[in-house]
Length: 222
Image 1 (spheres, rainbow, N blue to C red):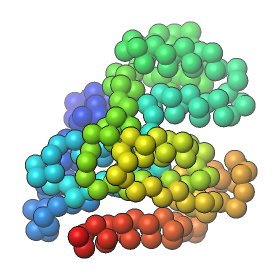
Image 2 (image 1 turned 60 degrees about the horizontal axis):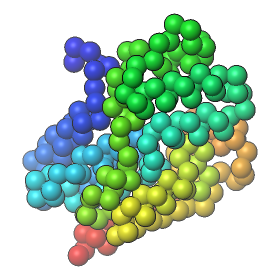
Image 3 (image 1 turned 90 degrees about the vertical axis):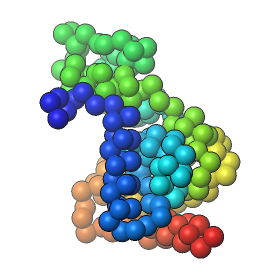
């Protein structure tokens, strides 16, 4: 790839489609289940917009997936951390500009925001922010499971409910006391929640894997 930054959600969806074809060819499976986590949920929905007979996708499982435009999710994440207060005006202005399809001049931006709004990735952000996951969910008529942890501090249960409202045929599973990376969290303490992310000794909550397995097995049996 000449320029790794010159990528779009459509490119990722095309890559996903190629993986589906490769796995079907190697395994002989009639179709493949597609699971997308977090931003990957948007990519899974984009890849699934092709008719099932053409895509080879059995169904879609969305886990901790945003139900709003990613720019709105980022706004909420930034506002949730009090330490971001000094940079919020510049961050909100930059997000508004990217939402409108306009690049952001970072010459006078706070140093703490330069990585987020790096000019090299701004074209990708403009493309990313143009998608509404709920609209894509509403257009997909195949089997869909939406799994959301109730203690996810990056994507909210409101996102999951928005996806579910857009596609009433989908199955919604909200798992109590589970965070963005499917770890069990005992309290609403933000620091404790984040600490679980890098704790390899803490397993994925079995209710998450159980919900996914039960859904796929039930649909496959039909």
